[in-house]
Length: 205
Image (cartoon, rainbow, N blue to C red; front, top):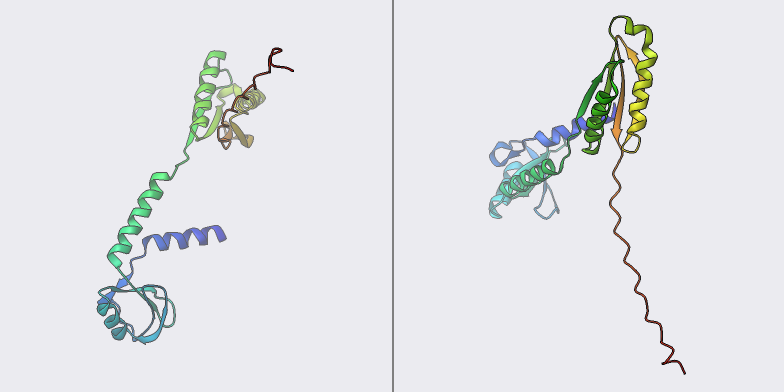
């Protein structure tokens, strides 16, 4: 519940549209100056006059407070910088996808290797992988074969991934989840040691 509450608060902040200037019609507000200084409690009209004198905007930043809190700022500049930060955050955001690989208990060795190669590529790209074995007809009597297949797949991906979910039969499907391991930063090659020239026999006294 706490995680959802935090997520909800972040979402609300992201979509908040502040009331600005003439939209603020409260009887009293607590005013904060453009530098963060407390200017006290006053009428909304008095706060608006101070903002006009400074050629800035009056913005209600905490409508739920008693009285509401307003701040003097350049609202156009604030929105521009906020938009710029959001674009930068989206650009740096890595969306983790879940790729699914499906197999049958009777899969051939070559097909298994192809599926394994695809799974390793997905993991190297930073995506989670769901590996599923589907049982048909009489194959349901030999689910242990599918479990061994999944464990073999996970073992061959052990250098790249962690096994999040043990093989579990759900209906006719048995699945595992693999998550990519954090990639350690590449180590810089060590500098070769410089060999000091050894004094020749002629220079020795």
